[in-house]
Length: 66
Image 1 (cartoon, one colour):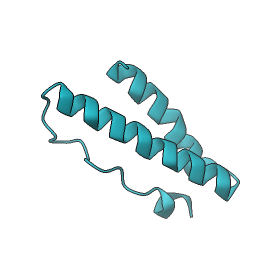
Image 2 (cartoon, rainbow, N blue to C red):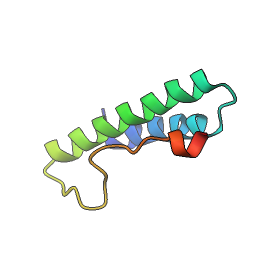
Image 3 (cartoon, rainbow, N blue to C red):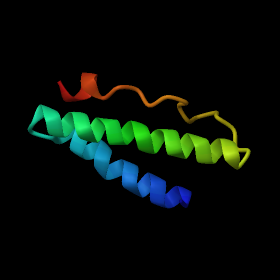
């Protein structure tokens, strides 16, 4: 998948994880954020791009949503 599409998918999931009303909704979207971040990181590594400025592991959103 193209990197712009990966980023496009990650952003709404991140917003939904941060602003979801139900804990289950926040948790499922937080998991999606992590999955998208892992796919973006894999794409960057496969393209030979630097890891500088991009986290290797998506930090937990629990501190943001609780």
